[in-house]
Image (cartoon, rainbow, N blue to C red):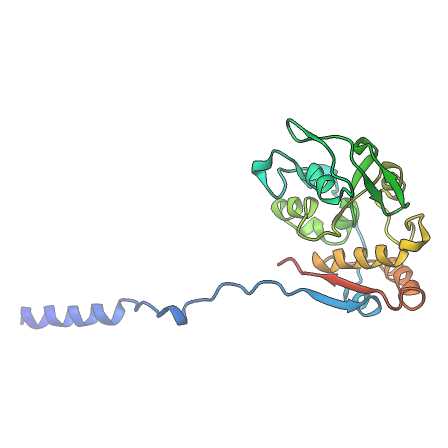
Length: 227
């Protein structure tokens, strides 16, 4: 009888022991995000419309600048963007101190040789991002947004003057002073909102639609969504 009980328990353990799934049946890794390309008029319609709220915002909730794409190079995000966008390579001293080079600030089409006269602008300002959905993000995602070099349009080196004129305004209240860059700017703004899953208020959407249906009707928006 004891032997029969032992056999029964052994059989029961085989039933209850989970079976290892073959590799083909295990969960597959998430597929990489796919780059998207749309006309501006269509792309703007893909941004959810919602009211904005600045409640709880402080700039230090977006950690920047961090150690950049390559923590081993000794350069922070600001320095890496300056190096990437230089039209004439600058000298770089110990500690990744960026010296004189040449940059084109596309907002005002000004050539700049002194990096101290440049700001690294967040295409969609941090406060605007907060208003548009980033208030619900965790600190890690906000840091990734504030230092996003994986999309060339997220951060841009421009004259400090134009960056400070822009401040935290959206296209309903501010546009780059160089008239020839309007369509590019609106496409990059829209791409950033779509890339990060941000919303827009109605005034912002309406302002972009004016151009999307007129002088920017041939403008294309390129972006890759962030998971």
